[in-house]
Length: 299
Image (tube, rainbow, N blue to C red):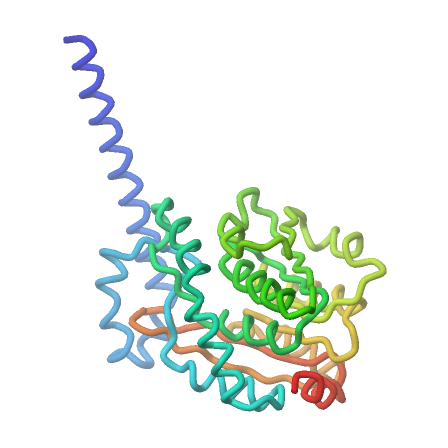
């Protein structure tokens, strides 16, 4: 009887804890909606429709994942900036979308988490994959690993490059201890996750190296993004690709490009069946003449 009573109490306690977690999650979701409400009001018919499913059923309260409805626009954007045919880029998009091994591996990991949706959705990270496959970089630096979805996609692209004869390495930085828990889904050894602050660690890891592809996706404050761009610029190879994952919300990268007289282009994603207004890709090449150099090498 005593054991039965203890067991029942433990079940009740567990239920109460789950209810508390659910309540906290719901409150966070409401706060997310409040934060994005001014932008949602600009296009209510296409976004407000998805508020109820998000509030009631979606597991995610940050780092939202979703498919995008303007993949063709992304293809055209990359084609223009890299001087590569749309058909070639479309083939790379399909290569990623049809990679059942990667998707299955990601979803096995996602299903273990109660704070992430079960299906792997790539959003604008499709563009990261295409750039990596086109440029075949020797060294990618990503700041802001988070769950590691982007890291896994980049590492998968490097793995395919390696199979075709061009090896590369991804260094991904974050300050959260469990960052990158999705990255192993890439099934490759072409990446390293570094739990270190980029303010103090970039120089130590990049000294003597040249970076071909830099992605800012960490602390999105103007000051920190600017600091990372300035610090990494010392190691960028001529013609290197620079991406900001925050260019939709900050002018830090655009201002950096203006100071350095670098080209700047922007793509805005359109999330499919999600209330989130969407992020984007701020894109530049490290020298004003690098666009032509990169276009020729990408062909």
